[in-house]
Image (cartoon, rainbow, N blue to C red; front, side, top):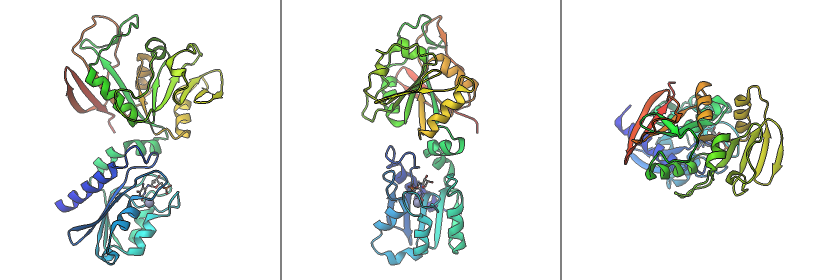
Length: 343
Ligand code: AOF
Ligand code: ZN
């Protein structure tokens, strides 16, 4: 691969990012068309249900007669199926470009290599896997949702320097600093759903909305197996779509749904239900029991852990993070540790 190819693919990935928050549950995809080292067209998937990256990139090309002598850089394999839009591979075949460079193979079973095959069968040179890791990281939610048939699971907690995540009596106490708390609001706007367990809902009475940042409010999810939570909690204020998973009742109100799940295999059915609802990612905001439980069942993809210099001496013990350290960032007095699972 030439350095030029890498720069072009990086640009295609940057274009893909522009679709963030608007294309889910589809992946973010960018496309660049290059003719004799000149970019002649750029495009990205802008909105769910609307044209794909390749369509927009081709539309941006003024002189279409240059296309047969051009190279396409696409961050995802061109699709081969009729979804909400027609197959991009067929569109490319119409213009017969010299070469197509692809970052990731599309894991969607309707595509899964068939787009690449179509292009190769037509004699087009296809290269696959350029900046593959960056692409996988960009669309980690999409790839996990399809391959694992569950949302991308992000565990989040804050812990003191001596390893506690709450006071013993659940007395509300901020462990992380203001910058960290603001960042959590940004994160809430980036995921499809946020989950808390029964104790966190009860003792913290969270709103689980986006206040200290701008963004859309995610779906609120609470686990309350025995329906112990009082109805006057903020979570049940009907201001935001909310799901309450329990063992007893199935009920639908406007904005608030009670979902009954079997006690045995609860976590499996819980995530399966979210999958059926097309929830592609979920931020788990505690408490200790939920976090421990998910770690124990190996049901997580990423951990975001705020480490504060405060000490409690005693309290509710924070879970032990697993996986490998992906990134460490200093946020004033706190440090943010991001872990990813070992693949
Ligand atoms: C591409 N280029 O820009 C995107 C692709 O219902 P549709 O027609 O929008 O198809 C959605 C599927 O197409 C999606 O699940 C993924 O497999 C692929 N996305 N493919 O060639 C794009 N966004
Ligand atoms: Zn397509």
